[in-house]
Length: 291
Image (cartoon, rainbow, N blue to C red; front, side, top):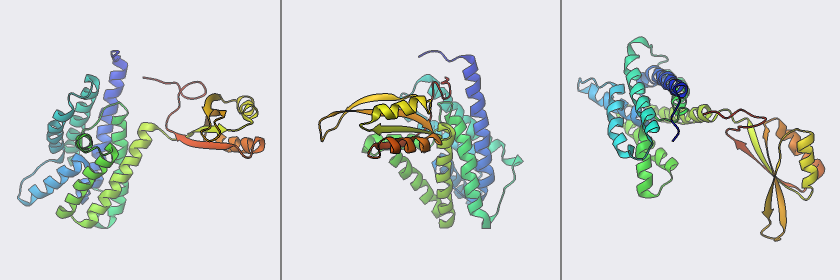
């Protein structure tokens, strides 16, 4: 692989540190004080910490996450390249360190009657922090590693495995805290996942359109010359008729899809149009792709 430039390395280091600090704030302010163990190794560490506290033993959540993740990393250390492993180790250590280091400086927000508020903001803030770390191409360890192992050994999809593993952690937290807190923790976990997707993938402002029409030349002309967007003709064949039939493909902004549908409807009301969301678009007319 091509060596990483020092600028990219510095940028990734800053993102990992900033993301870890934001994540730690979300955990320490909104989740730990109110027993919202929102899945993952952090949620498992919260359960262990609460159990140990009943015996008068202090188990820092951040330190636990570093130790547990260090054990889990043994399972996947051979599967990634050195850059990925370095970023992941940095994310694990930074998140664990700041989770414990920031506790004396952060106030707890909310109260027993504001668990929903804590779950909502806990999910948003932790998701934002993790998203910044994930943008570097690294990871923060956690139950994702366990889910990958479960998926390989059971043939389950990785996404399903993640839900199962995190669900077990949340169910376990219900026996230590309460069922109500576990349900709010599930809300925080769901929101966290959505925010991570938004940070990593960016706002889903683009749309990809596939158009099948006998008047494809007329539609393509309108897209190219009126909308001033690129358009690609794909060769396809109808399985029912066996006829060769071109498919137009183009990428548009959210607002331009309204114009596209109106144009296609005026040219060929019987045309087949498929519009899907696109996470990121790079190139001419869109953002420049960067390392």
